[in-house]
Image 1 (cartoon, helix red, strand yellow):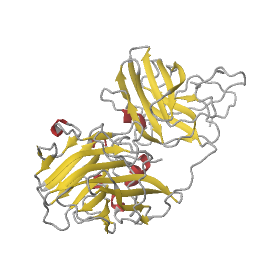
Image 2 (image 1 turned 90 degrees about the vertical axis):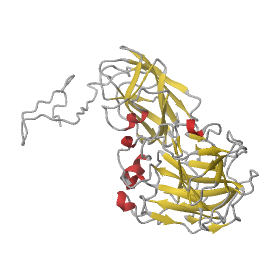
Image 3 (image 1 turned 180 degrees about the vertical axis):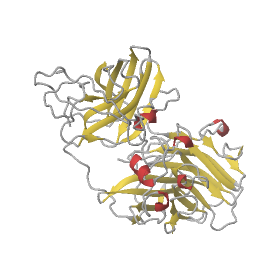
Image 4 (image 1 turned 45 degrees about the vertical axis):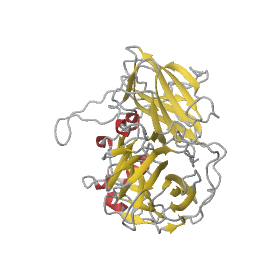
Length: 475
């Protein structure tokens, strides 16, 4: 505490004269706090952000970032702006390079903090824009960084009623070159006057009622398959390359696919794990923790665009399967499932048996932390005919508490008519092994993962086509 209320300071120096162990001087962080020496007119009275760090308006708190995107990068990836480390950064070369964040809430935007790489020597020319849908952005401020600090610069929003779901920073060069380089971005917001309505499905546990099609329209994907839920704006999506699946570096089937005369593909392996990565790929070194409490707080395992709220779709023909319990299993919300990193093997797994039964499994670690819902039988046998199968998982709220909604849908007669054959809401009490990986015993798997997988075991005669994974909008 500085006791002199009238002390002015432009520079602050810390001199270390040894410590109780040795003579090393070692400091992790330094922050200084000050107040104006006198009142006076606002030096920046115009509209738009104030580039001078200032106190947040009442009620404003840091908003959680649920997704991040950028125009490109040079290997310094976009997710680096969220790691609370000023020594890492996102960077991309070229005037007009941008990075954007999606906020958890669509609340009133109070301020944006940006820590510029080499911010104490470069003045960056930049535009701050906001959007409701992630597609159409409205410029909010066109200006310059201070060129005086590597730490966060706060840009206060003057419009007290501006709501924003997306925030984009476009960099138009700097005083050294045309690199766009940002170490950290934070956004602060406060609730608007209106809030969300009650949850339309407040009850936890099994949902025996197939219910109506939740889609507000008859929108279809690139294969002409009906979407149950709309695409998330700027969300991740993947569609099987039906001309040449092996050319897709995001698709790792770990087997050979043989093309049939009708354009579908035959799978001749009896142990199938067809992995699909997000556009960020799979990089185990980018997974900083497997602690489930930390994963739940972050919302992702590897990167902010991990598969989380998704609709997985595939058309399958089971030509023969001798095992009466043979099932198709679509799953996600984890990474690679192997014994080397058991806590990476988390997932919700939709299951569709060949006799028409359906269920979900929860894998809290690989490969011992399994729990299963009861199976329900709402359709007949799916063997020896083309059927469509969708597994859907998304985060929701039940009675004011976090929950995860799980749904299995089937196009039983290959005619585009989808029927929900199983539904379950995980709002706690499902699973007992999460504490092995740092969570509560029944920890919700609320985070995303870099890998989604189409799986089955026990037959070497299955045909497939039109597989897809889409990030969905479930507001």
